[in-house]
Length: 334
Picture (tube, helix red, strand yellow):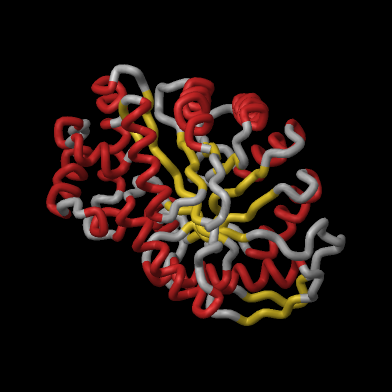
């Protein structure tokens, strides 16, 4: 199993706040700062470049780009420049993205996500090696594309941000790691590792890095800390109400009718925190007293998580999240 590494992943901050947070997490011994590219927040490459300029050892992950809004040739171009600036500390994340944003907001065709991811990774890897790429895929097509400079690294780490068994197996086949969605449970991590192992085949998956976004709320007042994360859990469950049987929920045993009901309440302008039980909090978040949080995080490690990526909680200062994770978890579990 790869060495356990603690990471941070924020998205709703100014660029300067990102830089300040990155300096702090580097000083405290976190391994990686993951930067989501969720629409319609600040662009990931700008933030990553700012962090790269302000740090010296912190790894910088783009988590994740999708092949529908960014052509892989442009991803290769941007990533190679970022990796040069970061002196080899950058990690590239590729995933399908949120279907609603791409299909409804951007009005792009989302079909064939698995194939689009595979084709993008193939083109990016070839371009980073310095190849001139003529590619005729189902989703990606290029003619004579080639970087006009030599990348710092010809082989780069690519992690897939994927959810279902088919794409998890794809990650095991073609990627160097995975970045799992928020709302992780031990059952889902075991499910993900089994799918990854199928993709790895005889190579085995014991050394395959499995990172995942963690929703956390740590406090000496156990009840207050658990209640504080319920609105975020309700919002995320509601966001996925159109897929009530998706693997995140199904593997953990969350009732699909409850998922639909939460989504309906949110669509009606309500925030149904009373529908978020303590079981949901314990299953999908790391929340409560420091002791409870350490116990629940240890279960994720036992299931096969190698890098928890602690995500922001709306309304909680970034420095507080970083400090709580460092004081109560990182310094006690590593």
